Length: 311
Length: 246
Image 1 (tube, chains in turn green, red):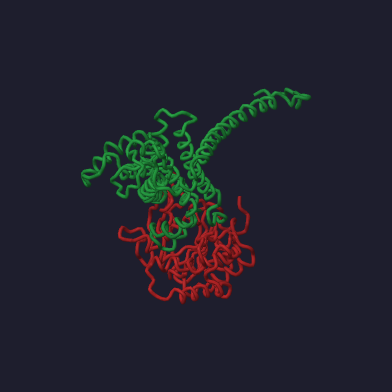
Image 2 (cartoon, each protein chain N blue to C red; image 1 turned 90 degrees about the vertical axis):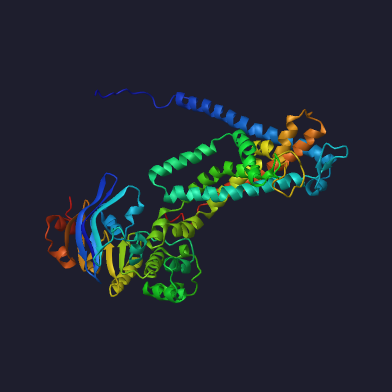
């Protein structure tokens, strides 16, 4: 090796040098990208807000939130959003009842029981489930879940809430599993070791020490998965039906907030017509709900897990 | 009562403990000394089968407790850990109340007696009763570092083990707390057999009856503490205890 003794000036007067110039260009490109993203959100929200404002100028908000009949395009239009909200709530709660046990137990298995090799295989399988396009899930709900459901309950309608609920639950289970596993992994391993060293079984240590210490992260996992269920559109549009009634039986068809938006938007709607305003109002409501759930989930994640000061 | 016979532990391809054989007599304090990463912790963990919670760990040779092979096919590792308790270098109270920390082990073992009585007994043994008696529902993490370690000792005593394995229990404590834990360990000798890993040679000299010197996973010398510190049999031990280490 020949020692290199090239000397060059440290600073170029005025410009800050070519490195600084490259940084400035890069900074502008990144800013433009960020601005485009944020700007898009602003435009979308603005359109929704204007549409919703027009909607509420015509239809009283009280009737919207408390009304039990949703018939926006009838001769005497009724704008009670409750049937859509009820359908969305039911499918979301049902789906999380499927996904939470499935996902959390998978998370516990992956984090505390699985060997290295089987763990990798199971994690890959869960990841595969997470990467299934929702339209495929919709197809499964319509052509697999519903026929199976009809074997047990022959009276089930072709479009029904139950099969959509089940399949939405399967769809969000990986979200619960992966976020739940992260929450468990964030718990200081010392807790696990100390619990085991006190002569408790693995299950007991996980249930009574690790899981409570991960409670916030687990709650966030469930909440973020529920937000996905609320916003899930394709499965419910394909499999749950388009009847906006207050059906009590899960075997009947129901129409969710998202399905209404999707199904109505597929029709020929004018950007200044009543259809659009109804869609905008429902979409705005949907946005507020999912945004609140996301924000709550992120707030839970932002806080340090209990006792993390003692790793 | 507790013994190792050609005990080896490997983590993947790395040997952490190689062919260690020693006997721990009942109701004595045995200290394990040696440089960082010499296998002190691994030896302690081998005695209550907690190495196996680490992925890739493999233990060979035998470890016996009252003559029973701790790694025997019919031995339940959970039961091993109940009889042979472990205190860690850093205090690891659970993020629960003082009482729930104490109650965790006994509950896991199906303890049928009065948990409050037990809590008072073990907290007294650990010298913490006076500090926490007023509020057993206080969060354990609100205690000072030294008190947290005392709580961890009390929590382990609550399982009623025969042996206490202590892995550098004072390494992260200030001198006052260290002195408190040391006098506690000394008082425990009447009831328990204690194996304590320490990098503090004067602590080993003060506390223990027997001292084991480990180097690179091998047991170099195992002698009565007075012998090891004043008249060691091996040159390596002499160099280590006199500070003339290479």
